Every structure is written in C-alpha cells, then in structure tokens.
Image (cartoon, rainbow over all chains, first blue to last red; front, side):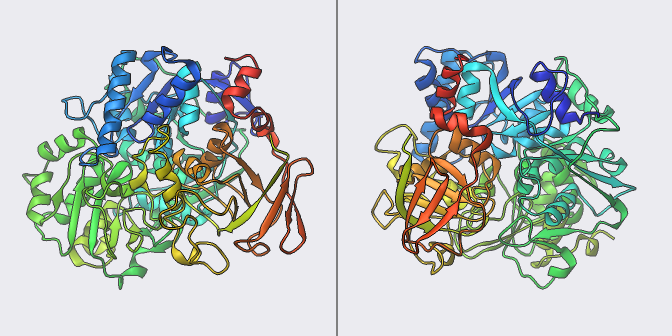
Length: 432
Length: 185
C-alpha cells in the first residue's frame, strides 16, 4: 500500500519509513509561526516551562508576524506587540515583521508565503487555525494553541496523530466566473463543518493545478472550516517558481502514490461549478449565489488571508472598474506587498487602487482587520445589524464584531458584484 | 487527578465555535497576569446567541453580570464543540470561569488538543447525544474510574468514551509533564 503526500512528509519528519493513519508520532518541526494574539501567551508558557533564560530550539525556525490587532488604540493589544518585540530582541530572532517598520507585512498566512517560509515537504505549525493555508505549497501545516507552540519553542518537536486523507479531484476547466472561494464553499457545504475533522483535505485534478498559488492558498485556507487538520496540494512548476523567487533554502517534493489509501474520494466536473455563498451563521450553510438575489446587503468586505490577495483584488477590480458601489465597501489588502500591488498593477490603464477609490471603496491598511471583529475601533468591524457579503472565512455569530450582524461568505467576484447592486449578486450579471 | 467530578450542567448545542466561547475582541488580555486574566472568566461564552445559551430554555447567562466565575462547572455540548480558531484562550476562559469538565458528542481537533495538552480540563466524549437528556442546572457526577456520567437530577447514567491516545497526557496533567515523565525534556 502506497502513501499520501501528508503521510510521506510526516514519516520523513518522524524518522520513519512509513506511518499509518491513527498512529501517534513525534515530528521534527521546520517552522513555528506565531502572531500578536497568541505569541505573548506562547512566550509566557515557554518561559514558565523552560526557564527565564531559556533559548528557543532554533532561531532560524521561528517566525513571528504581528497581524491581528495592529491599527488600534487598545492598550492591551499594543502591549502585546511590545511583548513580541522584547522576546525577538532577547532571542535575537531573524524573522520578525515588526509593526511600524519597512519590514511590516500583515496577515501571517500570506506573509509566510511571500517571505519564503513556505517550502514543499516541510512541517510548519502556527498558532492560528488558518495555518493550513501553507498546504498549498505541498507541505504539512496546521494550527496549534499556545501550549503546543511553547512546547515546540523549547523542543522543536510535537506529537501528531497521523490523519486519514480525503481526496477532492476537480477535472476539466472552471468557468471564468468561478474562483477558488466558490470551490471551497461548495465542498464545505457538501461535507459539513466537521466533515474533515482530524483529516487531510488533498486537492487534485487539472482544474486545481491550473490555479495560481494565490487561489491554491484560498482553497487550503478554509480546510479548517471543514474541520480539517491540514490541506495539501502537490507541488508543481507553479509552486516551485513561486518558492524559488522567495527563498534559496532546500526543499523536498512529495507525491501521493497511485495506490495510496484514502478515507474518501470525490471527483467533481469543474465546468459545472456555480458561484456559491455560505449564508449566516455557518460556513457550510451553502447556497447558489443566484438563489440569494433577494438578499439586501449593507456592506461588502474584501480582505483577509482568504480573500485579500492580489488575485482577489484583480477579480474585484474587473467588476468595479468604472462603476460606483451602492453600499459601504471595504478593501483590506492582506499584506503590504498586496498593497504595493494595488498601487502599481494596472487594469485598463488605471491602478487597482484608483479603480477602488473611484468606485467609492474605503481602503484599509494591511492586517486581519474586521475578519475576526477585533477591538471596537477595527477597520470595517460591524457594530449593529449590518448584513455583510464578505470574502473572509467565517460567518459564525459575532465573528465580524456584532452578534446581530449577518455575514454571507463569498468570492471576490460575488462580493464586488453585490457591492454594485446592494443585494447578493451573481458575478455573471456583471462579467459579460 | 480527581476521580470524581461533581457539578451543575450548562447545556449547549452543536458547533459551538471559538468566537462564541470567547469573542475575538477580548483576546487582548494577558493569560498570565492574575488580575487581567479574570476578564476571560467574565467574557467566557459571551458570544453564544441568547436562544442557545443554557438549553433547553436558553436565555441563561453562563457568567452573571459583574461576575468572573460561573455557577456551572460542567459543560454539556453537541457535535464539533470548539470549532474555529486555534485560540487557547477558548479552553483557558472556560477554565478561568470554573469549568472542570466538558462532555460533548464530538470536538473540533485544535480545541480538543489545547484542552488536553494545556491541562485545562478533560474533554470527554459522550456515547450518544446528551443534549436532550440533561438540562442546564442539573446536578451531574462524572466518575473517571468507571467512565460514567450520572445525572443526579434524573437518576440517569451515561457511558463516556475512553480517552484513547491522549489518556497518558491527561494522566500526566499536560504535555510538559508527560514529556518530563517520558524523559523527553
């Protein structure tokens, strides 16, 4: 019996020839990532357990990316950044992307990719559930809590239960109006919010491999909304080109064997996919966008690790170009690199930033912003009964701030089309 | 480790996510400062919609206004308890509010790991759905040795699932104590 990509990576990091789903193993960690919300707690546990003068297991393998509560007057949030700074300085950590400096990046999952910390075949843990995003690079990556992160800081190891893999194959070609966000919402709607609990979501098929790295990241990003432990896409030339432009560190490409064992396999015909939303208040509350055309919205939000990448804004700009939004529309680039892209990349002789400004959008600085609500003064946060169409990843009660607001998760195309009409709108109405 | 846990039940439904357990705006407090961390108890489960708070009636506050601890010490949950974020503030806030055990039909993976590795409380899995058999406020007894839950208010007994691969970490107290016993650190 052959092995899946995930099983091969975990076996290699446990010093074994093979591993079996359900088996508990200890793996060596290549990268530990933390941020401003969970970093301070992690640091505190690390010092409690390993001593005040303890050193991290390998300073080259620790990456700290403040991104959650950055542009706020909340004193506790700002204090938490100071704790990160102090730790970075004390441990002399090379990979810290500090707020208020040239080095500031923004949302950790995209920053990891852009700064070359995502490398095929590696094991990456992060104190954020959307760490599964990095699986788009053919690596094992998953979210953990402060305690596990502190354990890694001290030892460079963590126990893992080897997950069973689920294979989602998309054959053929996606229609032009379909984005990775539609696909992940479709699949979560099919399997439910705990349909992949403890398991790997492995994406395959020529339609998936035709996706850019950004779109692949969107697909892997929301594995956690299906309960998944990790997501993975085999590394190919697209992956290696992206990686080689950003790092010269070595990596290993793993492929699933033809006779690998899967808990579940499903093949979709890519050409039949339609734009999807997840209605309030659950990511698996799937509906076709065209079935929701009577839903009036108060706000459109385009941003986050899920929907705030360059390709997401290019899609939105294609729809908003030369038009005016009908509702408050928030544009939040995930990282400073994406912000620079908005300033420099052109469509119809205009920068994307100008297209958004002319359309009447409000532009925020790179960070997680209102995706998870956050402090009261967070850009784009809900405070009342707003109905929001959003390119983010969760629509749990209160997720974007107010418990009374309602969030429809959608692709950047759908969020932009809806911004123009003030109701949930199928992008096909705008893309002709 | 205590072999018997006695307490009053707070009953919740399926898919209780980490934003309901501790809304993200509160994640700014220190988890180590003894005064500051009390805020986590104050806001524990404050994101649960009113109708779902304390089943079957709902509209029951987990922590009363102005208090930092709950009068309930055992949570009964449905499937996929703790889904969403990796924030360890979720099990931590429940512990700070006084929770000693959770019994749910199933858990989201990271919440389960955090509960065990951080040694906050034991996340028990029930053999069937308990939500319909236990009401908020019922008096419960969990017996670790026999793996049973007794609802003293109705004299019903329920079987709990064995802890499986995490049993050794639970026994040791947390991942660090486990690793020390195993000679890893």
